[in-house]
Image 1 (cartoon, rainbow, N blue to C red):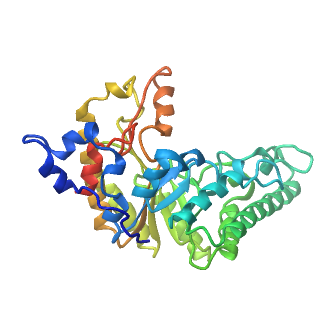
Image 2: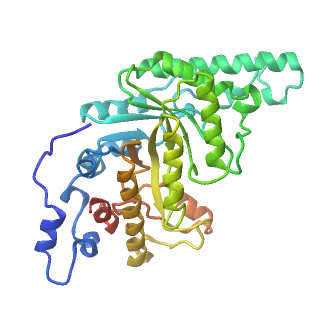
Image 3: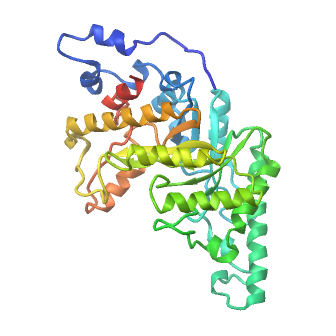
Length: 380
């Protein structure tokens, strides 16, 4: 999706010429420029792929909303389109918050991703309770388990149908099923899987295809898709589903990565592996943590993060986007899992592993929407 530049911007080259001798745009960016002062990211990659950001409804207004409109031509809901947000009680759908994001995307000519129709997390428990309100996974009777399986699959079908019908003409890319593979490999032993095997995946995709717009694409989404054994197990699952006629259009690679992990080669191999099945690839939740795993020790405050960490992050972003551009015939979208460092789930993770004190800084814009070295890196 292409847009017309709304107003003249100072380019990186012009900025460099304006700076005092001995200083460069990358070194000065954090202190001198903000996101609205520089060229839009999506225009830089207009010939390659869409550039997206994950958002909460409150971020659609004020400065964050302006930054969204300026730099991104695609958005996705961070939380408000997940199962527990949209259908917290059986048969009671709540679209209020999701509608705000849909409206914003339409008004600003943005592509819109839906995240996510089916997931093992942030899903209400009623999906997995039998007609007497008891957990289905505890049932041992074979005939009752078969009955429960049919109930669960009907619930999947209804949930997907109601949402996809509502947004049929609004959504470009659907994350139909999220995180089906376990961290150590093999199918995730979620309640979905325990109760239905892989049939829940099949029903979700077939229902989405039946009601989605004709140009909408359907994705199976996961994290750590670059590394083994998870990569091969996801590949084999998708290959088997395709052979079974399941209408999967692409794979979403979340991209929650670190400064030194995974390797560029692993990332490239993963994209090519799924492309070999004739599938599209999207980078769906990109952020680059300053830490390894676990994120310990973490910097206690944002001000404690040294400049060299931001420079290392910039180098990582540069390498990554060079690879994405190299593979742009196989990648249709790259979405950051946030807008700027002032809102990221990685802060919660840093706190969790550091006795409640710690911050991360995963994006190309800082806490006050100041330009970081990573921005200049991906803009060349």
